[in-house]
Length: 449
Image 1 (cartoon, rainbow, N blue to C red):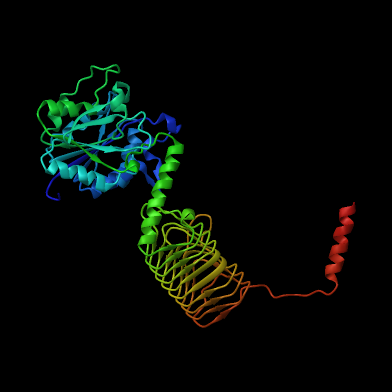
Image 2: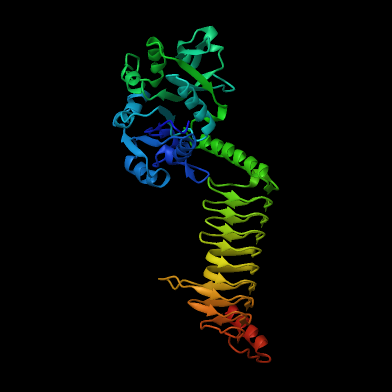
């Protein structure tokens, strides 16, 4: 299959009015990635050498988004919506370059599996001209039926045109096709619009190919592969299916999920073997977790890298740029952003570490804050190996604490501290006997007036 060239045409021009959104339908996300990007990934995994996105509504927004998830894709605008064959022909210039295989897919079917696309391409490699991907929904009502005879696909019959016997057929059209590149333009140009809507239907190429004596077959994909998204309820259902798949993959790969149904993965989450994930953990985009990590309940991670045997949470938040080395500890109600927590360092509770380095074996006390922002610019805090920062300290960046430095609790540190030095940054305590009682009486008197 690798020697065969393949163009994947992804139809993404629909307005998606039922989404009730200013955002083009196919840019709504599943697992932190636009649904059309999931389709692109499936096509690329199935061996597509080039991608053609057929766009319409929100064309500029689509192009901008495609630069991120499909930077090498060509975009083609369907100016008028005159049917699926018309949409495919919007990419005529790409088809005309000459490919062995043409895949036609839909940008709103994000659960399509690369294996289903690969099975269709395999039939093309055997000499078949058109391959229709079918599926068996629990209730076939409303779907076009696939009519087969002696292993060949003879027609796709819309339900309203089916006989009583044909309506009993459970094998339905999923909409996606694989077409021989050698025959693609000839078949597409043969599609007419002599129908009630005056549109050009891609499904017509089945009968056109049969009339030309070309081989046409159907392959079967799982039901979920064909699920199209038309509204936000269906979007949520697709998200649930995707998450269930990903959780199962993680567990089969050696990850323990204590309550799988409560863990949320993003499209690119990586979690190593023997990691334990407690309930209600959220993985945003860009998270890489090594093996043997423990992530406690109600933690939120995004754009973070975590090395082996680190310990996170509960209720921890790792923001983009967080980098935890082996056996580092980020505990409950700790937020880390754009910071390196080196091997064995501990940031146990109620702390903010941003734009910083916490050296190996350092200990950061509860309530500590790196004051990294002055309202205009961000500044860096460098905390040396083995340093100890007492509870409720404020470290005002830019700042460097040397290896083994010791910061007394309740300090506001504004100047660098040499290694192994002890630093106080707080006012000296003064005790005034009886003044507490006097103050209360004065305030109580004022409150009565």
